[in-house]
Length: 357
Ligand code: SF4
Image 1 (cartoon, rainbow, N blue to C red):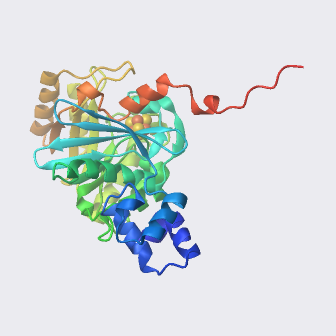
Image 2: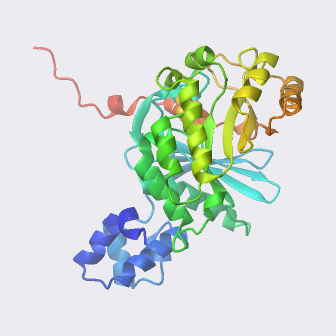
Image 3: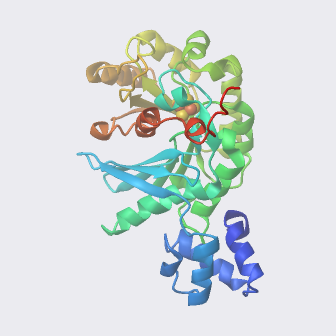
């Protein structure tokens, strides 16, 4: 069971009270399967214990401050952490799928030039509970319509492989039969390309999927839009990609956000066809949702032509529609806006300056 690692503060309360060991399993099930946001809902636990937990180890670690709904059904959840940070989560309905896109950091240090989250810099890593709870809240919201979360993608705020251990623990809890019980093949992680972590991820026993944010096949262009490319070159990244597919025999997804006149030319398709020449590689083309970063989206007809040419050159490729535009549902947009509108936490909590002598 992952409970000891996932909810150590609950375990501590149980130990201090001399509760039997099975209470931890009940508490874990109440959070991960019963989706409890208040210990009063965990009716398998005795009343006195519920009261003690409520006092010392609250059931919810994130406060849901806003839910926005787009006309296409996409929902966006804005959360506040216990220390006043904002993070965001998006639920995307698509046919019989309900995919939840979750965050792993407050902000992100990777500074990709087209990403609003990247403009924020990094505030802190999220704990496993804060990561998994985003899914629990979305699942609770969907349950009111008798629906459930079918897929989880780790593509929200942050670079998950910079918060590797907490992210993996959260995903294991989501996958755990005693936890949320979502099949590993319905969970995918996206990285900007930390090669040592790609190799480590390939060696994990769970069959989680992986996506690599590529965004251009050319080293010089990648350095310009993704600073990480200066540390891990495209050939080094592709070596790690090859290791991943050879070790796991699982499909590997390459995310490619189409940016007008930046990475959407025929020469990009030709270079991609050479670079992604492997039967397990799949190119995921994404439409860019506008953010205040100076980039614009490739128009739809050109995006479709990019896809057509990619397929003509033998690439396995799909073009994903942009979703939730009327609620700024591109990962990074809403929290970025709210954070920009607030004074930074460090300033708002700073002690009054000492008067000059
Ligand atoms: S695209 Fe992803 S890795 Fe890059 S800055 Fe944004 S959140 Fe970070």
